[in-house]
Amino acid sequence: MGLSFHYNGSFSAKASLPAMIEEVKGIAERFQWEYHIYEKGFPENNFDKTHYNQNISGISFTPEECETVWLCFLSDGKMSSPTNLWFYGNSEDKEEQEYLYMLSVKTQYAGIEIHKLLIHLLKYLNAKYFQDFTVTDEGQYWETGDEKLLEDTFKRYTYLIDSFAASIENYPVKTGETHEAYFERILKQMHEKYKK
View 1 (spheres, rainbow, N blue to C red):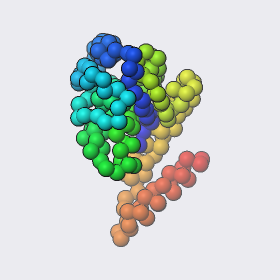
View 2: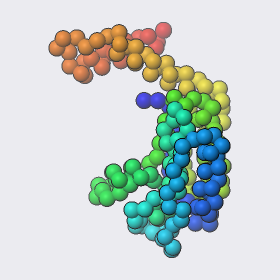
View 3: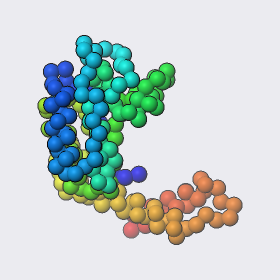
View 4: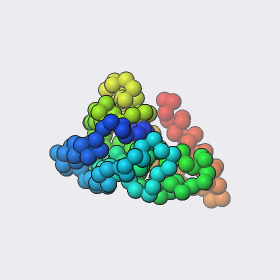
């Protein structure tokens, strides 16, 4: 639980992966974010192929109090991450295979400024390096650029998280109560508070 954005896409065959890595590395160093560089290039003549190998190319970085941002690609040029490749890379299940290309970053605890900075960075990188790139921003900042809407959404998520934590502390499980009944009771309490 927590405000996040979700993204996917591919690296443009016309762009330079080493150049993108260097730019992002410079930004990570400037903000003192931990980063990791993977392969700096793609196998020759592998773009637009339906198969990929087990290598990851690109860079990842982790702002403070934020989940890792993966600017990583499979050998076919599609965005992924080492974790997604490990979990879904060899799956025969069609639904599971879709998760291979789904990336998300929770920014709830990093705050509004980091969220905005990451969205602006993705817009910049998209214009220069990506293709078929999509972002779904729970704060709607990617779509609207509306800082007030983003701030209100952050506040709403924070309130819900705090309310849920307080409910768990203030309403212990009753003897013989099932997990389902317990969570239904907590959610009902939160709903009543939220309506006020």
